[in-house]
Length: 134
Image (cartoon, rainbow, N blue to C red; front, side):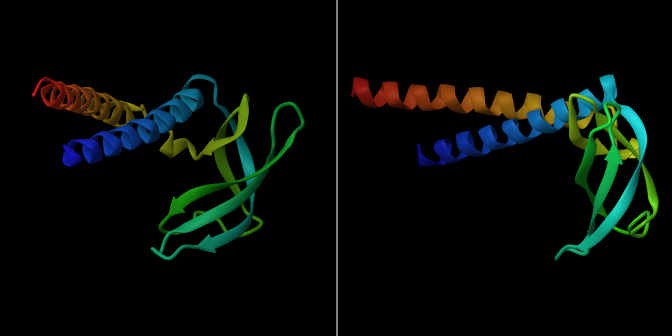
């Protein structure tokens, strides 16, 4: 029973994360706006990847400062321009155009983790029912 609870928690976490990734990418695919962002900083991570801090002006004139990552090799240096796609409803939802993708991988994770969560919940319910009936 404890193993089922762990599987349910892991499935719920994967479902939540993959749904967020799918929705963020979907927003960029549907209504994303392309623009040029200025790289203001590059930070190296412990795993050898880099995170870029970028600034750009959204269509409404709002200044946006956010990060994009991970990069094995930074595509620009501080002060350089980087092509990005952002969601006008949530301008900090930013990616590079080559990373927007079609969402199939995230959607597969959503479906598989939701199925695992439903099956696990059913098995937990059966175990609880069996304990009650004994």
